[in-house]
Image 1 (cartoon, rainbow, N blue to C red):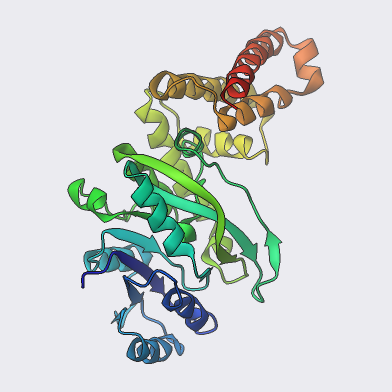
Image 2 (cartoon, one colour; image 1 turned 180 degrees about the horizontal axis):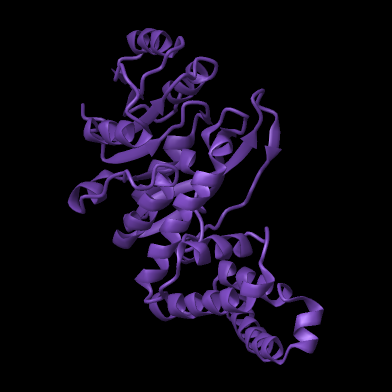
Length: 330
């Protein structure tokens, strides 16, 4: 029987966590899947563990590369080996809860227009103690807006339709080795709707050897390149430096005074361009962004700088209008 889901995992030197991760897939209540695991040149005991697990569960397709080709090539090898209608991502150190696939397949069956589906997650430490439980954008419009700036979906929870990738020649790209998920999501949503389940279906391990902790600077630069292309889709040209600053602003991490007015104008421009294309029907993520914008200049700039004063009035009016639209939806 052809598998309905192709689960893909790439791994290198993860002997401490890989068995627990793979077992969480083998224990899924939805059983019609294949689990493609690509070992990208591990030098520890990872490969031995995976050979043993593949003997126990014939749904596991283990590919040992024997050399380090990198995550992008490993992911594409896994994709090329897949046969399922859906692709599910499983990171080598994370745990999928037993009903993850069942809930995701049920949603796809009930919502055929959906092509990209994630879920909320619990962030845990290496011993599975819960560190945080972030709430992510839920609806298609909220996700689309948020994806203009950042990878708003939790990659370890993702499932998407494989035929979308095949028909549109979508692959993981070498130019985005540390933002490959962000990049591919922006391509997939051009061909259907996205959604994020409110169920917490994955335990995401946050530990010192996690690649997202050890490559922060490169991740930031790769993500900024995605943002530049996202803005270009709406006819707005920005530089990599603009994108880096805008991402920090949206995340409320930092802003540069000398660029603040320019950056706020760019953000307001993309909000208006986004709504012109996708509808102006009340969007929680847009309202959140506008609310942040009202705070960024501070009292001094707002009261003493006429340029900021007038601009803040226009943002306030827009914020009030968007808030009313959002309330009318609920």
